[in-house]
Length: 572
Image (cartoon, rainbow, N blue to C red; front, side, top):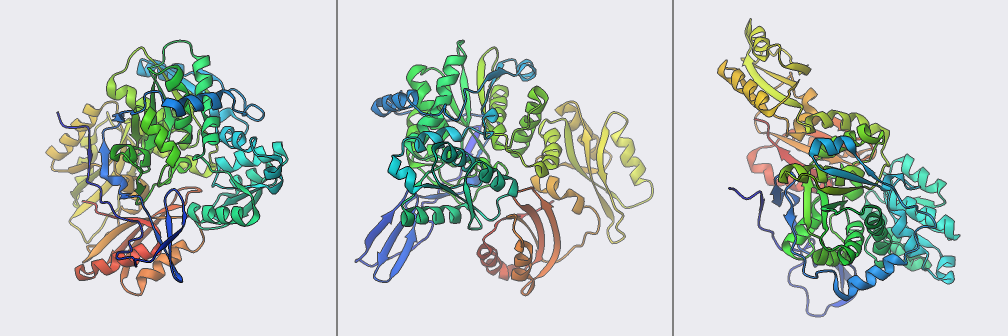
């Protein structure tokens, strides 16, 4: 049997490569993922951490990428975390969230699925626990000087609420691309919002510099013992609320503060309970770091589940996870959307993508291992959903449930072929969406469509039936590019020489599209553009560009300088 996961070898390189440093160098500052080195009047930035491609890890949905804990129950540090969690000051602002059975999911999966409802906290997420626990320990003098944090969402609201409760002036630094709904929410809770930087890294750099200049305390989102202990109170509550044996607790992973805190408590008091992290396939920094035995920086990160979209996990959180957790499960965005829909059908609550991540992982794990008659707990970690994302989530959920498929069929551009096509589909398959346009320049027509189906074998039988009728058909259900841009891929096609298809991810910022067009149009011909908004996280943009083969390297350099994530795509 083939291995359920594979790794492409990791290249150990610095993020900023500076070979042959002069002998006389002096380290002037270090942080968790960057080192500044000064040489006379010049300052160079290098990264001591290796860079990993997030696509170098591939595994079956639900497969537990194993970690082999090296610390048992955490040793002396684990005992200290247990004491800190028991004494954490979180209940001034947070409440003990309910642990609720999900009866529909439980019946479907054959296990007892319990939902730890952190989405019901005052800021609709768990983050206020850690933020408040750290800020409540500040001295009177530190509170007078004020606090500062950088965040694009839930952590900001936690710090804002904590500052209001403690009478502390807090500055919340958010990227300029932050949706107004989140910045206004932080302001209503008592924070002083400053919009700075196009991306989170720039906001964080500004916040840390301002903290140093003004003497404010920087409140990190995950990588601090007091923040970790505050999040660990969730594990304490689960252990108290569910007396029956627990097989596993599924925890969403971004920087690692939540899972580190829960593991630090549970592995001390109930070491047989599995602590399993869940990450998106395109934001798998913890899974990669655990595999290699040390932290790595992802070369890029997807932002569909923006609440966990981090390139590198925390130093302390990784240390604890390496010692304590049992492994990580990866899920794709379709699975996340399915769990958002499942949660709505169970509790009439709408989770944000990161908030549904643990539930998606629990479902995938139970199916993969055929788990039965066990208790599993999933942390529903947040519900700060932007309304403009619901349409995309609704479209992806049915595909993720494997109850509809996206297909492409090539049929002769001749009289009667369309009737033959419909006859092959037959009365048993229901069309959900259908896209076709006549093209006089081509002998064959491309038809893109979605159909509802009951079983995988039913779909496979349809595809074979189409092929037998000389109607070549391809299953594109797992192709994100097609699902995002299929309306634009039908009709009006041209067989252009040297055409490349690139998929860019733009931030939600005015001028991003114009910047891209300006970068390429003076050098190469742009043959196609299709822009698909993704709500507050920005947009996916499909771009066709005619680039001669001998100019490909020049094109890639130009694309990298733009600063937007991109991948080359090919549709066959």
